[in-house]
Image (cartoon, rainbow, N blue to C red):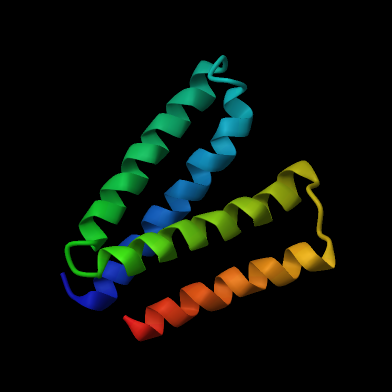
Length: 108
């Protein structure tokens, strides 16, 4: 796998990180079996993608990008699905995370 492919795998893994994180809300303390299964499958796929990406990318860079992309995706979906805050400070902080991930991509 080349570096570009590793970044695509990492992006996919981060999407699945967002899925499992949002799924926790629906799992309702793991009392909702269907949502809990989605969380578990998404978590495994997410970790497998991260593990594959770190075979090519530096682990620190990959992990920081994976968590950053997952965090931004989770916050955005929290806003869309659950009506979470869109305060200016929150959006500026999200922008900083995005800038950090983009910076890591081009610095790797």
